[in-house]
Image 1 (spheres, rainbow, N blue to C red):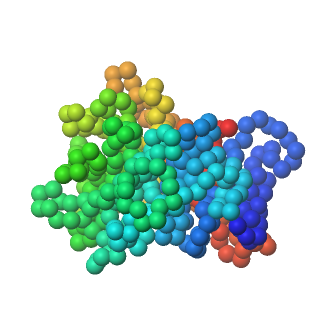
Image 2: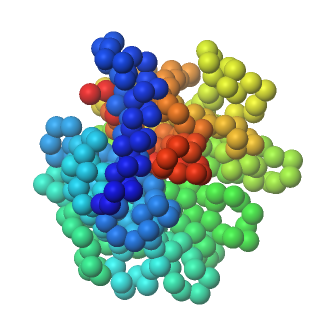
Image 3: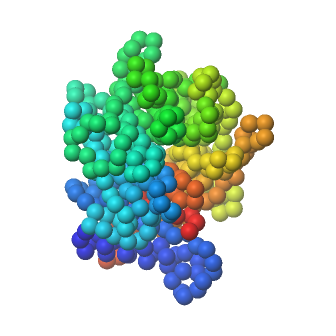
Length: 396
């Protein structure tokens, strides 16, 4: 892996542990979050260029995870525990895979956003790739099959380019962000849009791989806002799914509004095609967050979704300011009521990532989250800002 990377990771880990209450002084004050940062693939290419972890689900064994992301132009998948170990391919003591879309897709790069564990080393994966075709459109993909290091094999992969369902016009960008439902009931969500349209994040849609003739279902929202994102989907059983994302702020300068504003969740019934229980959530600062965000207009966004199957939902959330200068990772907890509707307010928990200038929460499974952590320079390691993704087990 190289001395420089090990030195960098060791220095960051020491810095983080020293800043945690009770750590670095021989004290044992009970449970403390274990921050593993940086946590990334280093197997080939310039791993510091465009690296990020983007999705997480449970693995086949206890305390094992399936984590997806992007390393330079490659889609990567990690399977194993979240720990401070190393292998010759990167962080953790598990296994890293490079899983790019097939050569027949004529792709310049691959990004994997969301995984789903099917058991016995089989997965569903969703993401996007940049095509080398004229105009370089970004196209969504869906994969189902075993975890392997791909080498041009097209089996298991399908691509999808969003479209205007009225005119048939193909979208300039299609992102498939999240997948849930297992092998028999798999549905995914994402966004598609057109460069000349002016809508900053396009239109949210459901992707149904079981309907290759028309897999796209446009999500219908009950509000009048024009910009919505769909970043997470969770299969509740039967024909019920819950979708999470963001809704744009109204804007005087654009009919579509700003890209982000509030977070939302809603239900979808695949048997009836109906959407219900739409609700918007906004983070309200309290405690130390009041001083941190003082005088700032906040933007709240759900980056994904997880449920315990008993009516409790957790959402990886990032709270930022409209000027983009400040941000903190959060976990939003929302309970479903007996009548099927969601609580009108969320409970918010912080994810402590000490020593960062900016951090996010991009995906969650149970008590483990992954996100972005940006650190100031560390003496003796770097003379500039260090930016790396962090994996943060919230409970051991």
